[in-house]
Image 1 (cartoon, rainbow, N blue to C red):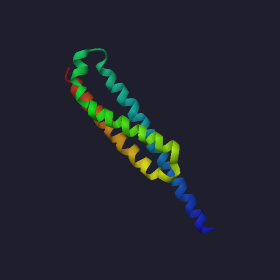
Image 2: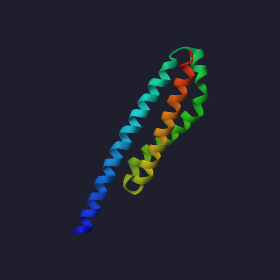
Image 3: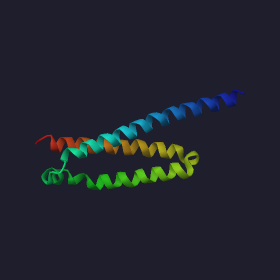
Image 4: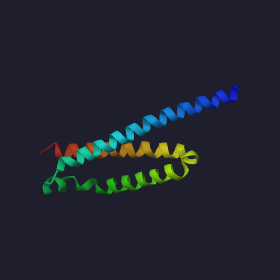
Length: 106
């Protein structure tokens, strides 16, 4: 009974963390889309932020990997999935700041 309680507590803690990480991940993804939109249709601004393309492509690939793992084997890989989501969130936040720094000079 005590063992079951500990396991339930661990599961609840894990699900709470997953919810927060997912929320942060989605918010950062949305903010990245907004930051990228700052360049609009202006080819000069687009060229100014083109340097983030390699990081953006890496982020897209990692996000796709997260999605596939979550669909196919979430239970077995949930700790890895959460770790990847945290790293992608950090990468998104870095790209957002780079875009704002570059376009903020205009």
